[in-house]
Length: 114
Length: 108
Image 1 (cartoon, each protein chain N blue to C red):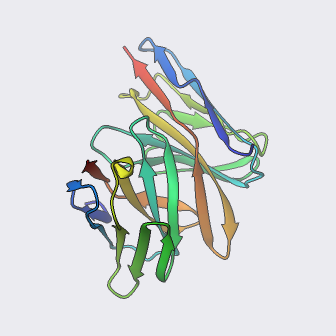
Image 2: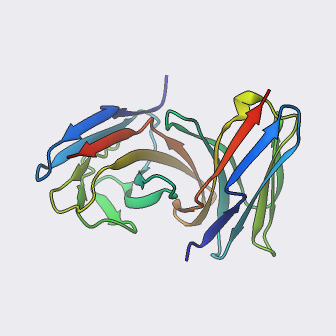
């Protein structure tokens, strides 16, 4: 089955530690995205990548880093510089058709930092 | 100020009722997305539209480009429709601006 996988579903870390969230897709999509969701707020874009070896900052990139070495994979590292890292993180990928990008979402990773 | 506004924030309906969720946006868009998020957090894309109207089962999405407004309708609502519905404006290259979501509860 084609889809997007994120692991783990729940992740706990101590403050001051970097943590990497995994996102893999087998949909052959060029574009991939990372979003953050906080309670009562809309999703916000952290980073996105339209092709391999290229990525762009979104609206809230500070304290995060990404890489896109393979088309299928777009891992997100939450660094110790991120002031409020506890949140629900969603990865998405999209195919492109006539300027429209239908997005497919992974199941999400709930990160708790204490 | 959020560039995508949804209303209402919360909505409770009885099974069988017709539900409407509204979305207004201030950016120029290439497409408007309607998404559904279930309690576990997973998000499913319901519609992507840039003009007119789309229908899938009991769900109907419409968009008025001139007025920068979209609506999601659920006909003959059912408890399994209970979820958060999110609209998102794609202003370029798949970069979405999201509304805050509408929590829908359908009671039997």
